[in-house]
Amino acid sequence: MNLVTLLYLLASVCFIQALKGLSHPASSRQGNAFGMLGMALAVGTTLALIWSLAQAEQAALGVTRVLAGLVLGGALGTVMAKRVQMTKMPELVAFMHSMVGLAAVAIAIAIVLEPQAFGLGALAGLIPTGNRLELALGTLVGAVTFSGSVVAFGKLSGKYKFRLFQGAPVVFSGQHMLNLLLGILALICVIAFTLNQHYWAFAILIILAFILGVTLIIPIGGADMPVVVSMLNSYSGWAAAGIGFSLNNAMLIIAGSLVGSSGAILSYIMCKAMNRSFFNVLLGGFGASATQDAGAAQQEARPVKAGSAEDAAFMMSNAESVIIVPGYGLAVARAQHALKELTDKLDAQGVQVRYAIHPVAGRMPGHMNVLLAEAEMPYEQVFEMDDINSEFGQTDVVLVLGANDVVNPAAKQDPASPIAGMPILEAYKARTVIVNKRSMAAGYAGLDNELFYMDKTMMVFGDAKKVIEDMLKAL
Image 1 (tube, one colour):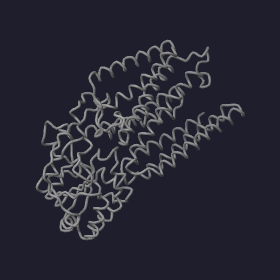
Image 2 (cartoon, one colour):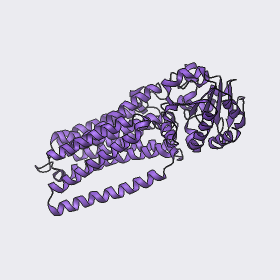
Image 3 (cartoon, rainbow, N blue to C red):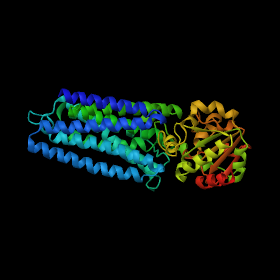
Image 4 (cartoon, rainbow, N blue to C red):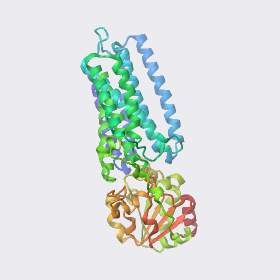
């Protein structure tokens, strides 16, 4: 057992190093390597532990089943990861969170039904009180994670007509009272199961938690989905940690706690970046109203200054400094590699090119960083919002590619705007702004963008990849 503890400790150190490495694009590959090594150590140690604690026949059967699950799950994960497009990455992350939550619920059900198989309930199937509390809480968080992630997957996908899966917040009268009632009933079930091991309380708890996961996520609008993805990531970690206590598995406790705490910290940072209340998002968009997605309906047909890709190329080639703001539209067009060529061309002509990344650009945390890293953009050209905002006022040209809400001046200039107070990339301060969009459609927040109507702004309509390729030809 001392060897098992040591190996689990080494795996934990690897997970910590993985988080450290993933904090910066330059060290992200190393971080991933540490993560894979840690998981290999943890899984290998667990398999060896199963083999050593069981009788020969049972050990062989148990290890065979675990290996079969690993092979099947690993094969499915590999296929999905290889096929997923960059625009679908947030949906894949939401799907994985849902699987972690569902796994926590399934393990908890197995422990409750057969506690002796897990070394619990030696006395007539009676589970110790502490373990019952851990199981109830782990089940509650796991079920909320599963159903909440399913809703988040639907909202991120945007291809389902069912209203719950629409990007706009789903708000109705008495919604918060309903969430409060569900939460109180779930708490009563947790207490009932913890004190008396009532199976009916455990079953009702699962149902209530599944419903609560839906009602917590539906009032959160599409613009806040990056925060939701991060929050669900945190939930999945805490669910795993809760089940780890029941299984007396130190590795699961440590790994789950790392995921849970890091996800919570990231959610807080992103809420701060969006001027959102962390607790409001945590409690399901408390205070959300139907006015938050009404912006699209209020949008007016106003004149804009339109230009061509050739015009944009001429402006950039004659500039001393250019800042590029990537957004979700760039990911949709899969234009990151063409953009890398454009950057190289401008660099060769002596133009200083930098990238400005908003914390919630795209559909998940770090979406734009991953997109640029895939095209092997130089890390020294990529800047976070806080590091580059002061540079916009001295920049000749800002090229906005498929971004909308993260450059909307209404956040700073209109106190009545739903995004008022949200930190933005201050592109409107540049001498010239070039915006590439397919159309004048509103962004994910459903709001019109004053930046598009400024005298200094030129709109270049069209698919981002096609527009960038035309810029390259012009250069």
